[in-house]
Every structure is written in C-alpha cells, then in structure tokens.
Image (cartoon, one colour):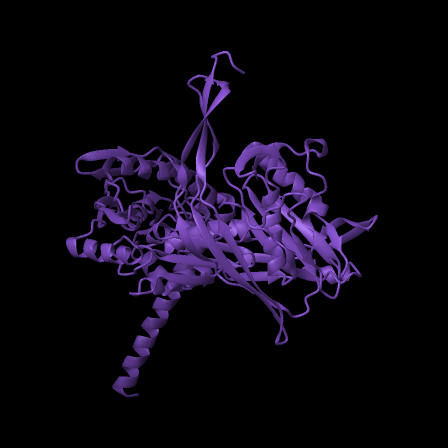
Length: 581
C-alpha cells in the first residue's frame, strides 16, 4: 500500500471520529436539554439557558414590563413610563428556541465552543399610546413649528406674509434609534434627532410667487357638471397657488381639499322614477336621476390644468369639468307614465338673497301652487291662472311690489321671482313665449346669477307671463324651492323633439345714474324717525336674442328688450307726535 493511501485512510478515520463525536454530542445535548434553551442562549440580555419556554416567557415578560427608556436633547432628559414597548414575545421565544435544533452547522460549532448567543426581542408594529404621548411631550418642548407663506388678495393688491423655518423631530431616524435600544432593552439614553424644515422664501422665490398671483388677478374659472356651475374668482384661485419652495406652481393638497368638499354637495345616489296622477293633477312625481360620484383625482387634474391655463399670459377665463361616475337608476321616467314625460327639457333658476321674511314666504307659496302642473300638448300656459287669486284671503302676505311708479307693500310680493324663473325655464326648453313684461326698474334679485334683462314681471290682470306647449306630448312643471339657501329652480319635463334653444348674453347700454334720494314727510311716524321705503337703482336698456332651431328649421327668433327707469331711494321722514303709531 502506498504512502498516500495510508495517509488518506488516517484522515478518513479521524474525520469519521469527529463526525461521530459531533453526532453523539448533539444527541446527548438534545436529551439533556429537551424542552429547554441551550447553553449560552439569551434574549435581549436576559439569560434563558436551561429554562423552559414557560419559564423564559415569564422572566422576559417581567423584564419587558419594567423596561424604561431615556431620551435626551440638549441637556434635557425624559424617562418613559414602564412597559412603554409592545413586544412580540412568542416570536422572540421561538427564534431563540430554534438555536441548536435547526439543521445549521454554525449552531453546533457554537455549542462546541460554548459561544454565547443573544437574540433580540421583536417589537409589534406601531407605537404604543405611552410612546406616542412621550414623543408628543418632547416635541412640544423642543420643536419650532414651521409656517408656510400665506398669500392673499385685497383691493387688487397681492400681499404675501412670508413663512419661517422650523425645527422638527426626525421621526424616521428616532424610530430607528428606538428600535435598536428596544430590541435589546438597552438602558442607554437615546439622543433625540431633529431636522430643519425650510419654509421661508428668499427674495427670488417671493418675487416669482407674486408674479404668478398677479397673473390671476381678474381671472375666473367655471367648474361644471350637470346643473352645478361653480364660478371661482381670482381671490379663490390665488389660494390654490403653491407657496412652498417646491417648484410646482399649484398646491395639489389645497385643490384636492376643495374638490373633496365640493364632492359632498354633488355626490348622490341614483333616484328611481315615480309618477302618480290624481284628478288630472300629478300627485307625486320623481324623475329618474343617475347617481353621481365625483372622481376626485381626475377632477383635481382637470382643475389644475385650467389654473395653469390661466397662468398663461392673456388668458382670463377658463372652464373645467367635474369628472363624475354615473350609476343609472333601476326605474327610469319613461317606464312609469304614458304621457310622453320622459326627460327634463328645460330648467331655470334664480336667487333671492336679502328678501324679507314675507317675500320668502310668498315665493314658497307661489312655487307650491305652480308645482306638479300638467300641461297637455298644444295648450297655452298662463302664470296668473296657475297661481290663482293673489290676496291675503288666498294666503299671501304683504311684501314689496312695484305699483304706480313706486315700491310699496302689497299682497303677493315675490311672485315675480317665480314668474322670472319660469320665463328662464321656458326659454331653456325652447317653448314659444306669448307674453312677457320686463320690470319698471332693475331688481337686484334677478341679477344675482344673470345680467339685467332676463326677468318677467306679473301684475294680474294687466300683465301676465304666457307660453305654449308645442311639444309632441304633455309637459310637467316642477319647482324646487330652498328657503334656506334662497334658491329657486323650475324644471320642465316632457319629450324632446330635437329642438335646440339658445339665449345670447344680454347687452346693456344707456346706463343712467339713480335719481336723487327723496325724503317725504309722514305725519304717521314720530318726529325724528327715518324709514326707507324705496331703494335706488341705475337706469339701463337691455336686450338679448332668443332662438330655437330644430332640424335646420327656425321655430323661434325673438329679441327681448327692456328699458329700465332710474330709481330713487325714498325715505319717509316722521313729522308726527312722538306718540304717533
């Protein structure tokens, strides 16, 4: 036998002996340390060697319950309450228990040389309430909150209050430091890390922000969806500008916050149709309506696009669509009636802010008497007939009306709010207007959402508002009055025959100043009393074009012209006894 073969046999003999010894040692250890942690094993510096899992759990649980951590910043120190960390004991116990029981050669070698092994304690996700409170307490003592610059518009002048920088706790780095001490229940103090937060703008940044804001002065943005038209003015648009050091021109957070708030008033569930007739009058009617849900992300992008368009030089007006997701109703309008009332064909609206209580009451009463009126095809509609007799005997209250060249208290003040709204709805539906009268002077209520001239006054029996249903089927008039927001809507439902109505923007010219204020003596008022009974208004002439086309044929082509007289404020001056009533 050669020398090499002899040496190989010797090494094989020794290697076999070592393996046999290790196997014997492991086997002996497994028997001797059955259900116990192996020698040299500790968890978070707590010796658990020779302990069972239950014994180790109780020992570590006690240590964890008593554990406190110290935090320092610039000489100040905070000591936490005991039990500030929420540990996952079972995961930690399992990891340490596997030492010596895994098929890992390193474990056996460490056992042979009696090497000590210290396993960390695993913490559960998130901070405990105690830890959160401690960090908040420290933050209130050491943090200097940064302040964003604030931009505003007043009297067409841009004002910027510059922000200032701040110092905040570096939460991410603090979490890393705390986790390092928590996993070993280390009692060494943790230095609280901070970071500077830059908010104050330099001269160049301030100038750039001011220039952007000045570009938006006089600008307007209209948001549209369904019947909603929201007009944003320059002061609101400037609030969407990004005032931070970020290069982005628009603050997406502010835009998103605004759209989320807007969505609350737009989002609706789908509405199933209802239709019930009793004694020739519609007793109950609900048109089918799609459910709407604003798609915030897409709408924010659309609004930001429009604002960026306004920031371009020369662009003063922009439009943006409110993107919505529609959900159809289960029952549609055309499924619940046989009168051809399938869809909304016209809509008018008006506002009546600053109305006196009696006027608000009369608007609601007249609206209720017009509501649910069913008009057969070919029939003429008279507003005066719809509302019936107007007097205190029929429920109307005294409010201001125009009579004999003056504004006086009279029964039914506020009816013109309803007739004006119906006039707008009839034109929107493309119906023939037979009779319409303009007011003697400009009334502020009708210019809240329109230029002068789109109004219709009624004074029974001399002045009426009339139109004709020349559609293929019945039409239904529905009123939606909200006395809280002082907003009136009149909708006309029927069958669309493809007609398209257009109303041009009213032209206004020949504006004349209000007449001088008039003071009249009134012996019925005590001396020294001054009571206003009429309000000043500028005179003007207005006109707009009303045109209706169907399949290339012109059905209506009419010009509505109104000449408003200048009006004076009138005050009654008391000349009577101080006891006059």
